[in-house]
Image (cartoon, rainbow, N blue to C red; front, top):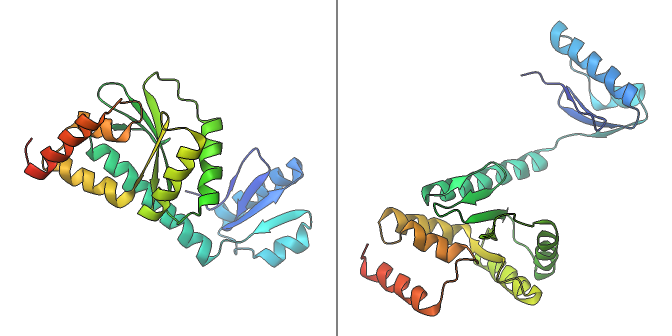
Length: 217
């Protein structure tokens, strides 16, 4: 794969440096030059050289911190997707999980601790923008810790969105995977716990807890 790429938005990556270009013609020219560098094994250019040559370009140089944050996001997203697959859902690349009965769960995740104010904003934005088309559908927030889950729970309660949203920590989700693998939870039990549209009542929840404790299938 080439080290150089371009997009219709006016962004071009040259030698690992992301450029945001206001002039589409300049973006195309830089992309063409980048292709030449890749094919001719020419020396890599640095940020200072590009700044001097094209002053209207805004340069964002990748840093170890941003690279580490991106890696952490990818790894967390992979853990969430792996859990969904292990629990019997059909997992799509956009984060949606489809259960065997057709119930749709749209997952959104955060690998970092969030304040209550941030989760309130997050819940409001998701509630405004995410409108599942399926009749049996909901949103599941997968968080880094129980503390962040507690903040999401308060935010969901304040918005009155219990019929649309639930939250769980990644550790709790992976414990659920272990119970599922041990046949202490069935796929329908998992759907009932994770999907706010499942209509679970106190008696059903108690039965799930008893089944898990006693180790019954």
